[in-house]
Image (cartoon, rainbow, N blue to C red; front, side, top):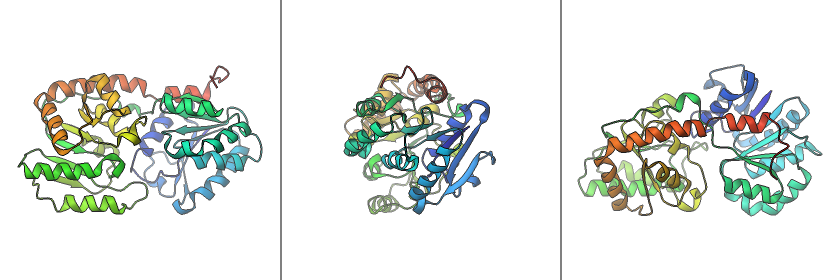
Length: 359
């Protein structure tokens, strides 16, 4: 039995649903329990798999008691979006050394973890059997240097979403995913103002749904207000969270614009980038990031350091002029990425022998 702990799983916001879906599809024999938020039962298709458990304001306390319970029961534990506090809560809940091949923490990016390196290194000495799975080699090396058993595991995607067909006709620009400042949402508002001032005719679809916190911060609200007051007639704002099918359909015929902050995404995987390529959708991304390296590798879009409105417009014009070729390369990339980002590597890391792990 694999117990997947994902407190943010309440709806289709973000990528926790698609991530957990991909992992569940790959679990041997389907022996899995998903510990999600209190609303998770409403969206999860297999009711005997889901355990609606976490109430957001109390999720840390609930995690402690759930970890303590699961550590005493048979089966394995996977924290599918692990943050620093999960390491500490597991250590406290264990009350001793956690058994080997019992607990796995999937770390998506370093973030603030580097600032807690000393505490984490001490924890690694107390809990040498914790398995840290990471999305990128740089993050893996960080945890290995602290003394953890650590393995790189590509970000899993559900099997059904790893298929793409190239599009021959460009239809619209797309800004997909939750509205966040680290994802360059202010640059999107600047771009829309620029399109209006230059009397451009590119349709642009912009998701303005919130993150897992369900409400926008003041900076994002300011940018949304700018968009709503924009005089650009070809803009469509998408306020509601979409189900996976409708969300994926947004990418068909689109150019996905992702002017993410370089410092935040230098070594951070983006699910939106993978979603775009899975739909054969070319991408405009920030250079010197994980996203940029991926797009350049497959020539499936443009990676640029010029994230100004005119810089983004130049990239848009370039892709739109040769859209069929870019879309075809994005579709080819999707086939390869579907193999690289299957959940098989995660299942191997969890269910097969770990004796040869480099630590």
